[in-house]
Image (cartoon, rainbow, N blue to C red; front, side):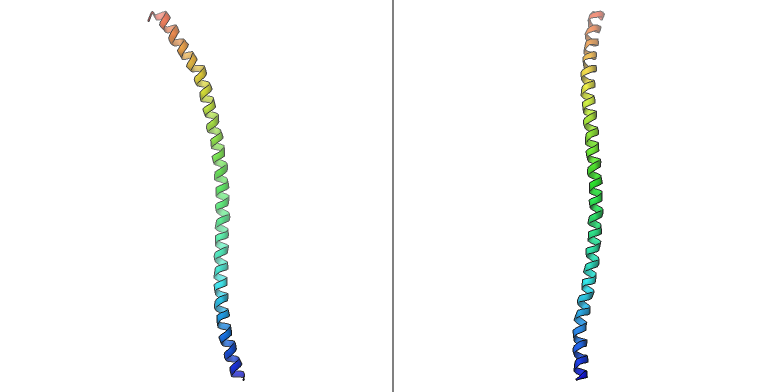
Length: 89
């Protein structure tokens, strides 16, 4: 009877240990993937903020350039006309 019990438990425990080891490996992998996902989320958030800030800077520069073109474009045109009239061109 004891031999049968010993054999039964020996055969039963082996699959549990294998399953348990596989579960531990899977748990480690899930932990690694979760950590990677969190890191990439942080990186993505930072890059999104940087992109939005650069878009605002570019839009401000475009607006300033348009304003400058209007102001100095008119000035250079007026200078051209004044120069033509004074130089006799």
